[in-house]
Length: 547
Image (cartoon, rainbow, N blue to C red):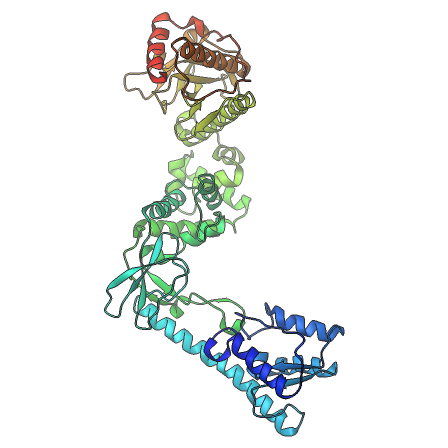
């Protein structure tokens, strides 16, 4: 039974078969059924499959098969398929009875003709039903109503009466009761709407791929449509769905009578634009569609083709940069080269180009991010191994230890004006300037390896007037350097221990209870060389935050 339950419900069929068996002195020993399954194909019909398997293998313990009528055997579009399954039973010596038909299935000429007519009628009924269903759904979509099924993520189904008056939101699994009622789409919860807009922005503005977006959503515990984990496919389907513009589109794909699914050309689509208020800006959606097309085309290009187009651009312009690549026609977005070759700098090297540092803003940002994340991972693993809780806020490059101590992390890169004697180190804008401590990671002269570390109160940093950059002379670095990451950990543990002792002395508890088995070295590295005034100022500020 798949539809029309008033006539073909499982209960009605069971009752009719039981009456037929009683009148003929038969005993029903086994029942095979396929509730909720279409009769267009044997696929997913476990009941019919088991029946045929039992009969064909000789495991059957019955003499005949009772079927409600010929259409319940199956509405196969090839009428010979229905006859084939009946033949399997008769070949095994098992007769087939149709309990509600007006003829006996006795092999006579009249029964053969009637059976074939009935099988053709059952197949025709499915074709008519499919056509009428399609016309009805097309009419509903054309009028701007939702044709059925769960609402897409970020949207909800609203029940309206015949006059269009809203009656309430339908929860998952609920359906309308009256034929005169209709269903329209409305905006869902603000949290889902924000997530949808975030996905579009991440893909277009931040140039993140679909896998990365899904990973971020899953890491935050956000569930996808249907309450499952996000995947690249669910993100991709969401990005391509015009429903977020307020457009309802039907018949983009079709699968007629359990056949093969096909993609229909746009002229066959049934659509109603602006059926409801969209939740994504049309300009952002247009950029999304453009990037989806670019991603699809990029997969078809070989590495050499990408490099050839980049080399041709280099010959025309004489140099390369992110802005030059973005503005060039026929050259893929810089993110494509980063994803394909690991970094844009690697793509530059492959076409024989070495840019000046002033043109490497994006590449340097990626290198800084990679360095900070690597160091922070080691710190957090070390802390957690000693029973100390720690977390990392990537957006601010901020490490929070034991719920109270905050450490901002930055990278000091070597810069010069061409004279090695004037070598200095520069830190890009500190993302969080209210942390108690700042961990500076100093790179070597070539900015290829970590040279040493510096852990000092944020208040002691010699920031520029606009507080956008931090320039530190080599003389100042030499006063407060830590040779290794182990020395950094020793300094952090010393700071934590000092905090706990201060709390115990005044009878206060730390913000987060520490593991009693944790060990804290007493050394604070060379931070004792920080000027006394800066240290006291930081201690007063930190003390106010902790107590």
